[in-house]
Length: 395
Ligand code: NI
Image (cartoon, helix red, strand yellow):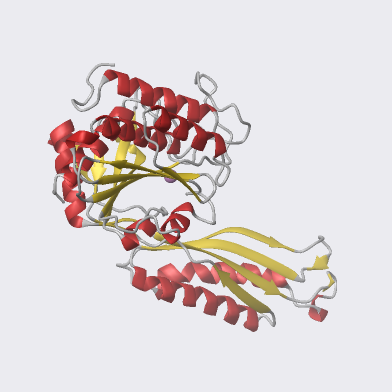
């Protein structure tokens, strides 16, 4: 491979790409990352990294200690795949599992962190301090891995945490950084509408849960357009609705499922209250009842300024400043890395993987999603350079 960043050897780049292909070929859904976890453990152990703790079933936290006392840094990668059928028939390492695919690049994240761990292990007599490499399960599905790993106490004593996420909007060879909010806070909710069943020909004797649910969905469109500040980003999406049992029966019940996103944590409670109140009041107006249920969602991911500046400098040093873009806008997607960042100063950077010529342009979670593998040594280079800088006392 040509044009490697100067802190990445050809052997290391090759090892990471090999690991990535093995993981891509054998994707595992959230909470089922057994073989991925075993591959990571095997690779770490063969490099002499023996301080490895299991966490939340399939997760691993590997500790690499430098030659003396110093700072403690965590590096994190997520390992799970998605329930999507891969549509890249020409790919030599195409998913071998029907309906499961690494469509969010977590195979890249895992292999990059694996490479960084090997590099740090090889130079452990050259730095002071400790690095905790967190190989996290279940980023994509509840119960979320990040929340469990924080709960298990693995962030105790950690002074900073760095992670990356692939980005199909940024060309391979570049990265994106952003101080402040990078990803939205998300929250899932369910609204259960209770009506009363009756014959289709005698609707006045029943309470139509289906018609009520439609009215609720329509009215919820006004949360964003009429109830919250237009200068504050909010998304309310209803992704699923289910009602009724037969075409000639007034539906007795309906279920509405959705998610909302905010970029300001202070808005979370307000949006949840608005959704609940609209659901209940529209139901009442229709003679029905609505019950609102919600889960604790991912927090807003807010990148720490000094740590993000450290990553930016380290990246500019390795890749050239022209390959480090400032991301003007945050994403309304959400990411459970936010749980770590709530308790430890953290920074996530975006790793460019786009290659127009090769048709690697599809969005995350798309069946044709693909990665320009030149990004892998680039991601490892930035993570490694940032880790060295952090352990040297920079931040
Ligand atoms: Ni992801």
